[in-house]
Length: 403
Image (cartoon, rainbow, N blue to C red; front, side):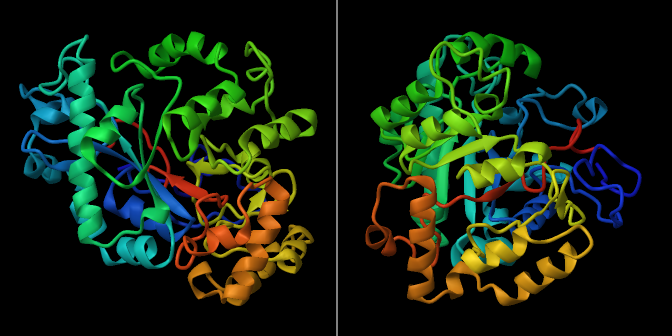
């Protein structure tokens, strides 16, 4: 298992050298312990779903079963060739097992935490992959996965106001239509190929990225009926955002102003929300998917305290002022004070909710009026809310996931 413990600088990046590093151990990504920690220590989680050989949903990122090669032996290495029970023996978690966990369920259903469900396409050589030209097969498979997952979500009464499906598939809108699912969805663009090493996939997707500036990207999502815009950090990262053919966005100045004009309330989710960008992303009205939910990461290197619940335990103007006044020496006390004094969104009265929504609307150029968001924001924050999300639960971990 992958540990984050004292002395492991790769896991504790973003923690000031003056902070005390605890004995917290980061669980392997996409496992139940990782997902429980992630949803308990942020505004929600992102996870990856694949279909097993017996038609069940398993939480797993890679195309091949992420265990030591010796454990696979002569078995077909692709996830879709293994049964649910076989994968669970390695320690991987089924979707239904996750959702039935009391901590996951209460945070997701009752506390308004967001869960992003990425549907993973099978490798072309996988038993369910349909070959290298199996686009229609993939569209139908994702539809089946969405239908399966939606049935489980309905069974556990998961709100549609804090759940989203997405996938690297340019026919995602067709998969949604085939599935009949009523949950929100989006496409991951540019679409990366289903095969090859991660670096090769990025290289093959880069030409599409270069000709798809943010304005064009968000228009694609709106045209197809998507409810959010997931995108790579490069869209906001200096140097990379200058390479795009067209007008670029950013996290300050004219580029930030142009971004706010483009998005007009459309939620934007960025991955990875690296430690040196996280606070600026959140401040700019962008949800960040973080790989660092180490409890000791409480202070940004740029000199600000880290608040991990901007949507589900939102700060009002005076509380934001208190947080922003924190120094390194007193920030732990201020964070503790706020964690006790600030009500969760599910506990806020109507007046506080409307005041916070009004503040967010003015700050981030939301088109909808506060009253229009009220009905969808009783137990869950508004769909447009800016969140901090645990990537793959508590963050990406090394390979193989199960050692």
